[in-house]
View 1 (cartoon, rainbow, N blue to C red):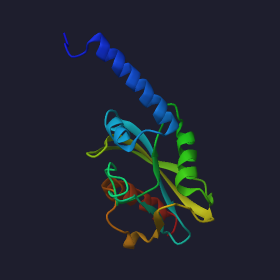
View 2 (tube, rainbow, N blue to C red):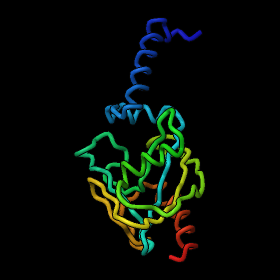
View 3 (cartoon, one colour):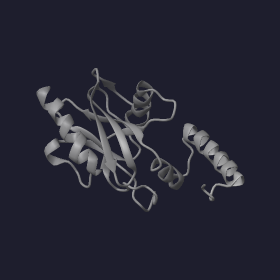
View 4 (cartoon, rainbow, N blue to C red):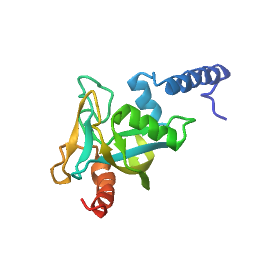
Length: 179
């Protein structure tokens, strides 16, 4: 028998988990709590490789450790992506990703290219759904540092599994499209 879980501790854990569930839905968790939470279970994420008419890839730099001390990828470049909320469909997650990290522009039809299971030591296990889309019109917006980069001139550092797994897979699709 597990002697750690008293009825009072169980009740407190349920109370805290209920708060976390509500705050995750509202996207209001403090960053340190969010980072601890995402390590507790396998996540589904939607990742987007957005490229323009020149075949350049859109990357965003995460805020520095000075600005966001709990971010495991602080200061690193990354692809636009979101972790799915508990009751969110893949289509809803993609729409949220577009609104939050792209915002402006029209996309050619996008497709889910591949699904990857990624064990990222900083945030745990992910099931990453990779989408590759060409920006047909407009320009993405981002409040931070972001831009299109030629695949041969990507900035550093880039989140490791984006650099080693997602971008190379997306480049196959982009190159097949004639870029």
